[in-house]
Image (cartoon, rainbow, N blue to C red; front, side, top):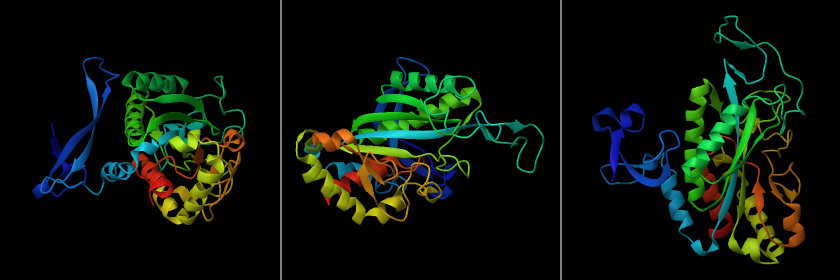
Length: 315
């Protein structure tokens, strides 16, 4: 059944007409309380006419994915994030001295990037207990999580959600983020989705989005006849995609630290310095998928997945 909540407390409705209607859209097992409890993902509507709220990005995504469902669009999303405690990323040196910016400040930097990516060891991997607990929780919830890894910057991690079909990708990613925040509470840690949490010579955080359709995965001429034409479509819509790919992404997409410049679209085979990467196996086999490397870690998965599908397959 539909339900409601006080939209005036979230800035989504005025106090004089505060109710927002929520519709259940996806159900997951509750990994915290266990059976028979469930976690229910809902989206939001205006009570007067049941139109979606402006903040409801799921509803328009559903409409886009209703086009040509036989294409069976798959998405695999790589969610990067940074774990903060006492005002600094995990593993970074801090001071307990009071400051104008809070009780704890960063007083230095760890060793340069290099030993942290996919690392093991207490001197290079920070927050693994939390990360493993999150993985266990999302799997118990029924979220299609494919893996985890420590990322390039210390205190930064990634997990992968997918492959998921169409709207399921946004649902699974949204619930996985909720569960991550719940797990982080237990450790007194804050999850940051800032695409450039630390300025300077440190990697930012993205949400690389891998995409394919049935024909892309099976037709032996797909690389030449389907994927390459999609690159031209994405290039023509580059500015529109960048505008929707996350706030603060300009600080991340600089052409450094495994990113392409935000100013210009590019694509290449096995090139992680491009806007879009096509895997070596896809190019050599003639079929497969591509990875859009532009989305920021704070991107809206409903907007990004539906926009990629719309640009490549609908318009």
